[in-house]
Image (cartoon, rainbow, N blue to C red):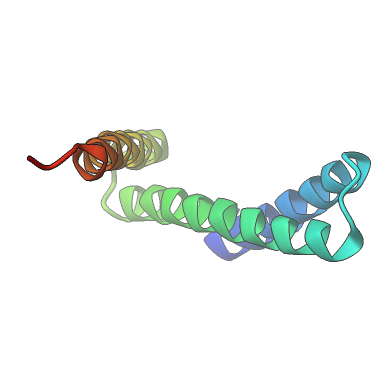
Length: 98
């Protein structure tokens, strides 16, 4: 499967599922569309990065699952750094100056 196909499918599936779930949770049509579009963009971005990692690994002669795994590990590592960094920033901003 080509990267373009994976990326388009990720957008369509994530947008559709999120929209249906948002409507079932009682959100208005406009709010459901906005939240669905935002989630679909984030999901598509992550799928695009993972898909490009698979393609790059295949071009270099490495098994595609290695490229997927490396990109996935780096994404999780980056998200962990962002989570820890933002938690520290919130603590620094809430401290009382003397």
